[in-house]
Length: 124
Image 1 (tube, rainbow, N blue to C red):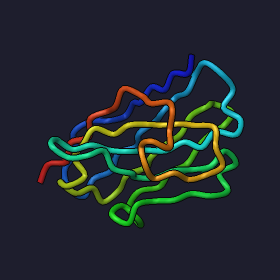
Image 2 (spheres, one colour; image 1 turned 90 degrees about the vertical axis):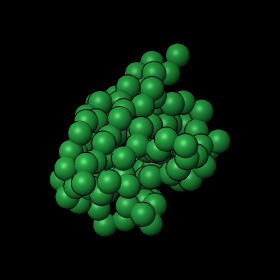
Image 3 (cartoon, one colour; image 1 turned 45 degrees about the vertical axis):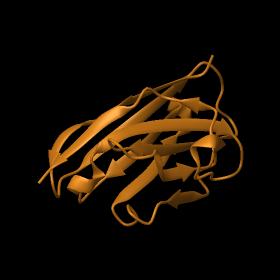
Image 4 (cartoon, rainbow, N blue to C red; image 1 turned 180 degrees about the horizontal axis):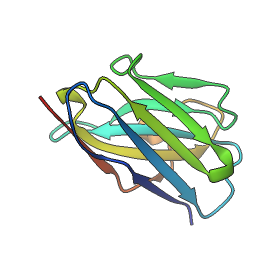
């Protein structure tokens, strides 16, 4: 059984930074693309960033480009989301997702495995 556990969420002032981590367990993640999505109250889950297994390719949503960076440490089966210059509109529950694919999917349906989510709140 694949398990994804997010950590690192919290409350931060606008302009601040946070780093989310997602630790994967249950199987080897060789060949898995991993991604971050977020969901604000009353809104649909939206794509934030994705990274291939080799980390050779990444993709970020336009809304976070230049502010957020996705990376991974395969030796630790962990993916990170470094968030800087945070804005109140970044407030959401952030979810880690994974699937065995070479594609950088931007839809939730592209990923089979999901974490429980981590709350990020940005105050103005």
